[in-house]
Image (tube, rainbow, N blue to C red; front, side):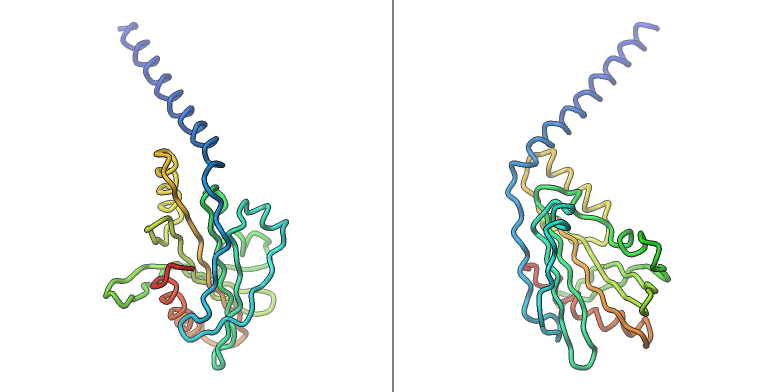
Length: 210
């Protein structure tokens, strides 16, 4: 009986070592994949026009570990302005993160509500995206965001990361992104502000060439 247990233990140890070595091998290969280029912002998104691209410092890009980041300011005469943030990476899946930690990590903002909303596409299908409702020192902020990994589009960070990891273990190319749309406002109803962002989200989901 003792020999059987010892054999099982040894087999488990070999399996663990194999998994660890696989991760190490793929980690060293990670740098061989091409780095993502900076995303191109569309001139128009759901009735909103691109006014300018906001700068991202080299220090921030170094922290993110990718040059594939861009922030665009879009305007609409009736509804003000919004920010579209696209972070893309093909060499480091850890570059992509969950936005809520950035918003509430400083302790200056309060997360009032979070959830998902279904975006109806022209194809008849719908895709769920995340939303955040945040109180800041200068008013309120509504945020929608989703993740991609190759053809995958999801509101689940864990699903995206698992997909990313599987492709890496197979030594297959993969590119993932975080797409975030946000809007500041002082007065108004949260539901209306969230609804105003949905045409932008739909436009981004329908056009994945950004």
